[in-house]
Length: 214
Image: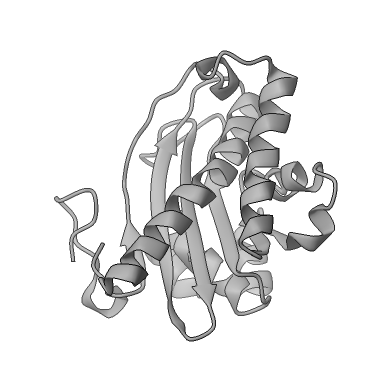
């Protein structure tokens, strides 16, 4: 099965589960400016859109966050009625927390860079084993200094989607944002929420077609 990056292939054991996207998106313009909105208007508009999408489809959200350190969940919590949408948030900043709170194996942490889609995927799976949310977002990355071959501002995501009786799907992306430390973290959190509708719609479409290889 090919991902969006045709140079890489999903391991055979992950076929039917992982949907892999490795896309680098250098971005120095705040996301709200791309829409011609003021920061406060953008924040409420985007978050409310996400909340409404979740509410209309009876979806609940859990997050497993490293670099964003709870910002993804916190943004959704700003919306009135978020108690019916947000189940929980795992903030696992250190490797030790990733192991103890989400059960990520030492093998994965040794084999892959902490800023990698392999780790974000493992975080999403670990959160899924510990909650009942239908949508799980995992994030890991670097907000300022990169190091170890990782550019500053690189963010790795996983969106896990599930419902009873339907195979679970995980979609992943790597993005790169520009700005100060907290600007990168804010943009990373916003992006994570904004992509829920995209991947959920893609998942529904693949189910309707009976196609597991989108």
